[in-house]
Amino acid sequence: MREQIMRRYPNSKSLFSSSSLPLGSSPFLVLLVVLPLIVIPVFIFTSCLKTSSWSNYSLPSPLTWRVGFSDKSYTFASFAQSEASVVSYNTSTLNSLYPDDQATLSLRESNGEGAVARGVVKRHSKLEKMEANLAKIRSSIREAARVRNLTSIYEDPDYVPKGPIYRNANAFHRSYLEMEKLFKIYIYKEGDPPMFHDGPCKSIYSSEGRFIHELEKGKSFTTTDPDKALVYFLPFSVVMLVQYLYVPGSHEIDAIGNTVVDYIKVIADKYPFWNRSLGADHFILSCHDWGPRTSSYVPHLFNNSIRVLCNANTSEGFNPKKDASFPEIHLRTGEITGLVGGPSPSRRSILAFFAGRLHGHIRRLLLEQWKDKDQDMQVHDQLRNGMSYDSMLKNSRFCLCPSGYEVASPRIVEAIYAECVPVLISDGYVPPFSDVLNWKAFSIQVQVKDIPKLKDILMGISQRQYLRMQRRVKQVQRHFVVNGLPKRFDEFHMTIHSIWLRRLNIRIHD
Image (cartoon, rainbow, N blue to C red; front, side, top):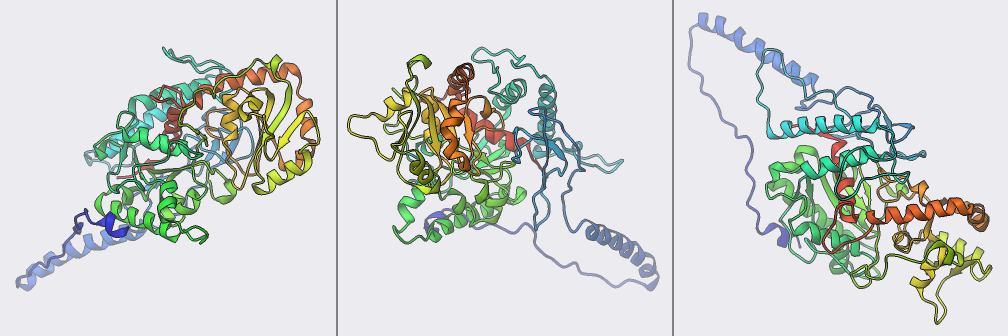
């Protein structure tokens, strides 16, 4: 595999070459005059380098930026890096986008456009100009976040975000419009299908394949000029790597991890962008359970890069400050035909529904407590003959979405498609698009320890409250729909927006 990746790439040349300068003989008087003029500047220059630890980059001073998406503030810790700092991360107190105590991504403001010595005229690079533009955009979103209206004040021919399903409708809308104008992604061309530039479109991992295929078309947010890009996509599919490199039953993924190591070495040797940011402006996308584990083979990929993951488990290293949660969508036929929509609330006779295999301890607890125990709580490990899974979803008021072996579940999107209020039962799961969406407005979140109280919790929700939540599920549906040709504000665009937000969260130094 390594030879397959390496065969097309020219050897990179060193950036510097050494040479010696011959010194001619000089009279003693000339040496006496010239030597101090040489030694003193060298001493000063060396002292400056030691002071800066040989770093060509500087971190901005801490600032506080109240974004306005919610009313809580959280400490945003900078990433520890063993090499020269190439990315600015504030260590200030930030206004979180989450309503609870989970750490989260926030937009942050750097302190200006970088220091320049007085009296020195500096010509700005392309990167510096892009970063200056991003600083203005961050400022504009910060201003938009101060508007606390439930409806965006910006005009839009297609859709105007409004209502409590958003943390801040106005800030989201302004950010989305700026993304459409500016955001560009460069896809590395190295690597061959099927393990690169490809992915499944008809399985539980279909959202991974659909996103890769859409991006590869080159029609949405992509650029062929890497100097114009704000982020760089590493186009390997963990699902396809597993399919072709994993030996069943071995429980070893070294071949998969080493392939990723080799690939990043190739692009780091050929292009300047990975080393420039230590991977912070690069992203991967994976819906496989082993996505996080695969990324751990490259420390900078795990710690610095944007990882768009279905398995968004904070206990396994998912970091909402830089990583993005990706919806897991099971498209059995590759299409959503017949999946979206459902009866009115008055025609939904089932209180709660779940059907699924015994995967993981949470499902075991759920099945032990509720399987065949209560007519209102339709909990099954498998459906009886004549029972339709889709029909059960559409005739239920609440759809139970417990984690399996991993935290993500396609049942969350299935519930939203069926206009059934999702009930999330998990530990450490960060739901998709949580930096924009207020999940508490349209879903129920139940702690694992409260599974025995599940019916009491659901029965305690008044009819009026349920109707409000069900209407909001219908409203939020557009953000999870997979379209053959992506439409504004759909699942594809919301995923792009999640990546855009995380790029806004950093400042790359040239």
